[in-house]
Length: 451
Image 1: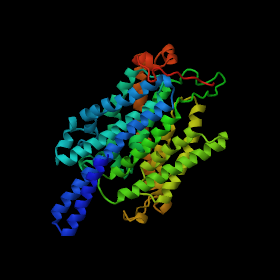
Image 2: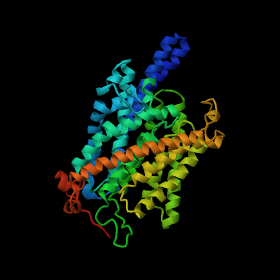
Image 3: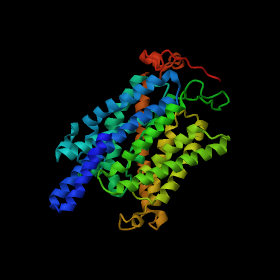
Image 4: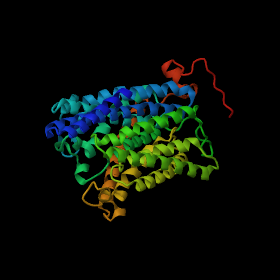
């Protein structure tokens, strides 16, 4: 990372030198193009660190007997999913548009090879990181009871088909206007993926949690939930910090340009995360009488997810409000899903689905392009822009949600009918590390419970 920062500094120095000596515009543009490549590549690498963050959060928030299984799933959804996105997904997402629904050209990422090599390869790796993020979100929702082979199957399908098709609707035009999908033509705004990435993963995760059913012992006969605490809040906390770092690639990196606006987006991103943390802590403290670390950590992630869509078009004050509301929502949502017996071991549905939806709607409420000097007029409802932009955002939320949840339910239904979706009770009670993988994440260690 240090070497990459030195390279970025060198490129920035070249930009300054170019202006100082009055080089030709063509040469200055070449320097800017190279800066765009370097910054976007670094941002993509930051997004990749989120895989480690997800792995640590999910492992820490679940039981020790399933730690190796969680790590294996996070490793393989990225590895298998990246290949699937290269083979099929990139074409469906960025190929020449077919009726606004999906791309129809560029399989094996040929679409990225048709232009200047440097930039297209940079765009390819950056978008692959986003596809991997959508797939790995589901892992936490189905933790501790899904068969590993089923996890591999759905991960490949998500990266190859589910994520790319809805991604094409909103983001197809990122590569070329000929790839624009129907949502982007309506004016739908999702800068870095509250809906395109996070709520897609959340909707599929919700489908998986419903089809799998709750873990053994999660709910009592009277319907009340039994807490099943994770084995390491230390790992979970470290994971959230890694995810927070990765988000500085996720959101500012989505400009795919080395320009000054990346700093403003970094600020709105950070403010929303901090506000989500404080709000979740306060809400949980009010409800339970205790300052709950797990809720505060999920509040951090809720703020980050919520600001992902509007981070480029809102003021810092609005970012604070968006994060605060996200922090409250995530706590209330966790209790809601427990109430209706949807067992989500790490709270991924509450973080990614609920706050993905909230962040997307917030674009239509808080967009302030005129205030920020980046657009012709204010478009948000709270800035005098009327209800139209909010309506477009709602259309996107509903359409993408229906697609992701519907296809997710179909995938998990077929796996269930094939009798490979859920492990048997004996395997679940013993733990998936030993039974599924023949390995123990904590060999020679013993864990004791005070419950």
